[in-house]
Amino acid sequence: MKFSHPAIAVLAASAIPTTTAISLNVSDPVSVQSVASSVAYGLMKYYTGNITNTESTIAILPQPYYWWEAGALWGAMLDYYHYTGDASYNEVTTQALVSQVGPNYDFMVPLHVKDEGNDDQAFWGFAAMAAAEMDYPQPTTGPYSWVELTENLWNTQAQRWDTATCGGGLKWQIFTFNKGYDYKNSVSNGAFFQLSARLARFTGNQTYVDWAEKVFNWSTAIGLVSDRYRVYDGTDDTINCTSLNHITWTYSSGIYLYGAAVMYNYTNGSDIWSERTQGFLNATIDFFSPFDNSTNIMYEQACETVNTCDNDQYSFKAYLARFMWKSTLMASFTTSAVTTFLTTSAEAAAQACSGPANGFSLDGQTCGQRWYVGGYDGSVGVGQQLSALEAIHGLLINSSTAPLHANQVHLIAPAATSTAPLPSKTATATAATTTTTIAL
Image 1 (spheres, one colour):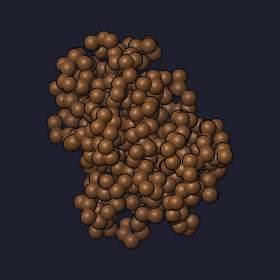
Image 2 (cartoon, rainbow, N blue to C red):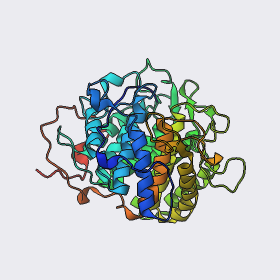
Image 3 (cartoon, helix red, strand yellow):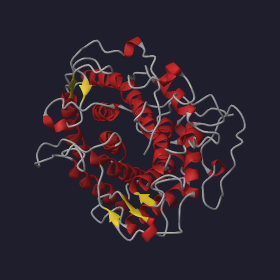
């Protein structure tokens, strides 16, 4: 994960909440929508890039936030629209996503070579894949659909699968000049696994199935995923991955959990993917109930109770919440546990969104970080707002449409012929091998 600049929000009048205090009734969809609207408003105030509207600012959050977190934000805003039906931010979300596709339509962006690793790129892929799965209006500015953007991104990562050390795996970094090039981390590999699973389910392409299984098997063989389904941070390929960094983060577990749940769904409830999904779900319990075993409130175990989280880490809970909620649509047996933990966490997050106006959120609606303290803790930022939003708007997931398949969505004709080079067919699945149909 790494850096960039400000971006959006000519905020629609309908998006500006009229209340000045957050009160969440988790059983009332109207209350959930209202609170989600307030939190989303505070989040989007951080983005002003479409006001300056320059190549270096559009789609991007201001310093000290890295490029990847902007991709995470747009993914959250797609979910916000999908769950609440509020389209206030759709225009700017689309503008942001298509602005970062890069010259080869794969989210490889020349401006961000110093802060784009495999995991960073994948967070933009999560957003594009979500747009495809929810039948979000297709882009009209280039020769691509949402799923084609995701496939192109996936192809770049399949080509980077590195068998020179550790028997395979993706490196954290793409470019040798970036710190961390010798690190093979769980987030990069877990994201590649999840995107492979989601592309498999969406397209029906066996190549993606094979890669999902391959990445998962490598992750377990090397030890990034333990036999108890704990997900460790990473390993050093200069020593052939013979030792591990055993730090665990919320988002790493969430990424693998959702990938497993998607594979469970795609394989019509196979026993092996049922076991794996349940295993990851059981392991997420580590990230709830700090200090005791009863509160069911999510926290960032590695840094939150000791006040050492950085700007990246403030947002990690957002992705565990996102992917736990989404797992309920792919594997219904997860619903009871996920609902229990995340409903309590959403209530606590709403209580934490009670801080004073800070130039972004309205008075009494600024979100803090430590949900378990029973109110606002004075810690503010994009990650804090993002985490609260993902926990809260996920309460509406049962009334949303589950992720679709390619034959259920509206795909548009490309605006022009792509000049992007096709990747090696021996390593990747190209657009020619997918079951996606583009209506001409």
